[in-house]
Length: 486
Ligand code: GLN
Image (cartoon, rainbow, N blue to C red; front, side, top):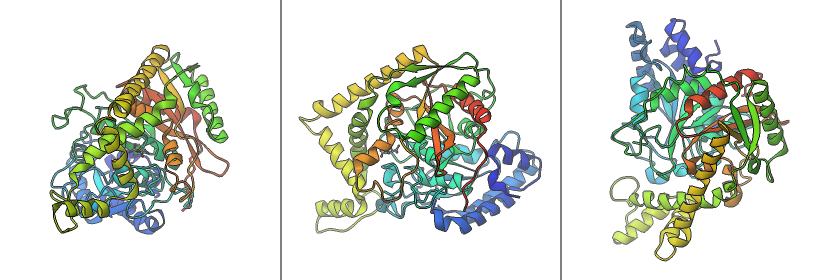
């Protein structure tokens, strides 16, 4: 049986029906990993032995009849390596945390564990989640399963590639400016950036705290709904985590959407958009019409300023968050002739070039005399961007558009041109600045056979509607279930 072809929801049924054991599933995925991961390189750390023990425990729990109330019992998952796992190395793909073993668990991991998940390992990312290609990993780049000479996107490239290549049944990533949605679109999988505050950030290594959110990467929208239900919800350990109750996202998938309105921002279909991506998005709009939704144009007039604002706000927050890596408290320490020298050596050897670039930009933008010109301005632009969306959502129920301007690019193609790399997130960043929901799901393939993603955006806490639209779109479009040839 080709278990990697089944969705989480399908695997769950098989487990509940006793048609497969968690142990057999886990062994199956571990075997695929050992066969295929040497070419993909999705994982930084594998936890096979632990996984088999967890699978054994899951099988016993299944036998005791705990399956119904534990929604992930026995399902093998992969976790982005910037989410803290108690006793398991959490590197952020950085030399500065290469040997860091957290003494505590992220809230999302606790919740997955309680729900019965099995953890296969920790996946590769751009160092500290800064990047759009996974090439900024201090260890190695990850390869796109659809074309090994291409990037899987980033920063959650390891998680996206692992789901696409069938090296796990589902995964978690984090999204600060597009890091779940862009790799999902490059790898032909589903990825969700939930509302800011929907999922606890406790135990997520901070990059830009006002933007970071954890979210699922899966094969289907229903799988994303399944995972989100488990990881979402209030957490006293994260004061930015919202008190809103968690709805049953799976039960909401079939709700009637006829007559609802979908808006396409005119700013998202202009210059710089690859013609094949444009075509795929236009085709998606036709599908929405066929589904009985109304499609119209909307405007997000401040969209052109999103990247500029983000590349002040995110580095500013990063420069402050990353000040903790000083060789004293934890992580790498490189001895020097005095304290200052030790700081210098530790930070120069521990951080890679992109992280250093962000720390410098952020420190500069926050420095006395420049704060008003940069950080304050960027924050004002951020408010305007959020207002653009609020206005659009008075006219329409959803905003849709491309996820990324092009399909996956070649490894090495953009690594020396940071501006070009930053442009990969032109359609995703506004969603983080506004704190709203963004779902990325497959909507077609390029002539070269590369996946293309569609983005569905909705207001704060609109996950039930956004997931329902994604799910029904997925069923109506019915993309032939292609899979990468490996
Ligand atoms: N690519 C963007 C950046 O480099 C977004 C990264 C992310 O969402 N973590 O900052």
